[in-house]
Length: 149
Image (cartoon, rainbow, N blue to C red; front, side):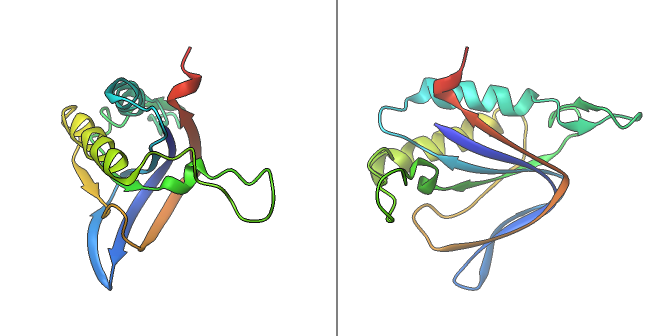
């Protein structure tokens, strides 16, 4: 499972002209589910993201977590995080999970993050979405459950 995590002052996702999810202070999480991913991968990433100290404390040092600042999360599914463009000019997405499994683990990820008392807004799985954000810092991190030590 892969996630692009961005610290934001606001973010929203729109589908067919309607805002379906929006947050103020918190994290925009673009989430890709890969072949063979499990609930354990989602558990790992949700725990990591909830406790990741990437918000500024009173001295301006990144020392506070999403939980510490009582921020929200906007989670948007993005299978293209598993795009492989090493060969040719058209990316292959064969490493992405099949849609049914991807949706199941995306929903599971959102539920696990919400279990940390994080307000979670969502995109719409498999929809064509427009994502708007104001990235603060900017702070953007790439997380991959396969690279856990």
